[in-house]
Length: 205
Image (cartoon, rainbow, N blue to C red; front, side):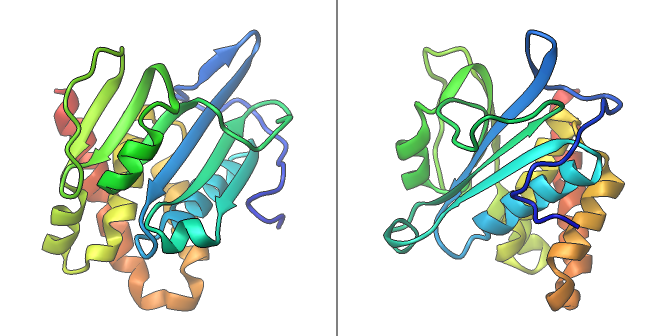
């Protein structure tokens, strides 16, 4: 299997909610938080899931001093056609897990984009811009499950519940693959995914 940052041949999925450019669909995602929140793993799971469903995918992680300084991030692009560059200037979806990342990336999202914020660690109020803002206490929810570090998987669940571009079963298989060396964490991450999806669906009612 190709690495998740490689391109993968795509096909039209069921129930996909992606931005359309002419005749192709494309979803640009920026995930950001502090080092230790599993930002890179979150990007890998998203990319690998989309690749499993036959999409073209890129995954661009940011390592180095930026990670140590408190704002680690990665960029994921999912498309049904070839992707020219893995860099995301303006995201269709911005997933933010802490306050410094919100300050850094709050302007890196398109109008009408989806902004998912970990309200346990960041305060995102209404802005003058046209954005779909979802505040979710991801860290608090993860703590109730018994492990703060699964806040990233709760974030994936909220995203999946809102955009529905990847099936839950595919996402679970990607979690199993990414966490194959930490199999004791697979069950709690699957539970976190369910909790995130439930939060998103509850908020849509």
